[in-house]
Amino acid sequence: MKKFFTWFFALLLVLAIGGAFFYLYKKSQSKPTVYKTEMAEIADITKKTVATGSIVPRREVEVKPKVTGVLAELYVEPGKKVKQGDPLGKIAIIADAMQVNQAESGVRTTQIAFENAKRELARNEALFKQGVVADAELQRYRTEFALRKQELATAGSSLQLVKEGATRGQSKTSTLIVTATTDGTVIDVPVKEGFSVIQANNFNPGTTVAVIADMEDIIFQGRVDEAEVAKIKEGMKLSIKVGAIEKDMLEGKLEYISPKGKEIDGAIQFEIKAKVVAKPGVQIRANYSANADIVLDEKKQVLAIREALVQYKDEKPFVEVETAPQTFDKRDVKLGLSDGIKVEVLSGVTKTDKIKIPDNAGPAGAMGGGKGGGKGGKPPAKK
Image 1 (cartoon, rainbow, N blue to C red):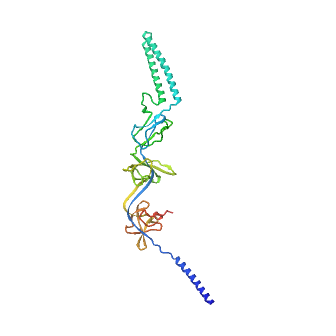
Image 2 (image 1 turned 180 degrees about the horizontal axis):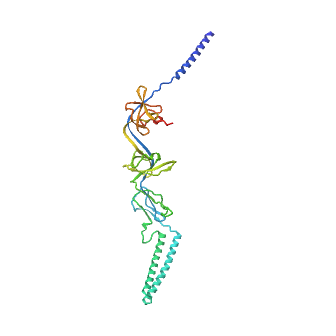
């Protein structure tokens, strides 16, 4: 009985070792790789670059007051349409004490001179009637009186200007009333009633009472990178996507490319401007952020494949076409326009050919739907 158990355990050990070796052998056998395929399609290919920017009016006008003072009344608010000459606000003059004192002193001085000239004229007129003074001498006193009278009137006007901002012989609307200088829509009113305002002078640009813009004439103002600016030119069409407008795309036409770039965030960028064609029913507001697709080149209804399907050898493109189940033949192709996802095929494959999907090409699917063009879409770098 003891010998029986010995042989039994020895048999179990042999079977266990054999089973382990068989399991390891089966596990080491790799499964055959099954490649999926795609077919070429007829598609539109558009090569474009993207510019970031905003929607702004072509012309904005900042309205400044003509006098310094306090904004006593405000007649407009953002969004109101105005015409040239419409009142926007009224300025109340806050007289400077020193200027008032100087003006009043000037009035008193000229008043003394005027009274003296008046007395001299009256005395010489009496002497002229007596035949004591010649006519030429009398005319000199009359001229002196007229000059002093004019000086007194000027001094009085100066005092009134300092105190009120206008004279009696001048319309107050020309200085105290801030008026629109152009037709358009008020897009900003940066001041409120009671704010102190300053007129434009050699040392100060002045306080802006309102900003008026023509919202019927808007443009896209953006920037493009220096690597793309050489590819664009005036007259190109733009498709403009406004962030605040989800459904509608606006169209534009490139009008201006800056001849000088500016360094922004460490990169040289060039300013561009494009006229925006407004759509009926779509309200555009100033300073909407937007992205513009600038079409560099496009082809309609051409034979195309995913660029990830293209492989390279010695910088020559090729694809692998299925000739039998899981049997592929390398075929050189001639490529045309590419948008980075799909590429035009000029020769090498047909619409019915089944093209092998390389391991690095991402999942099969409609062009533009698969992830990752991978290395298969670009030629290898030179060493």
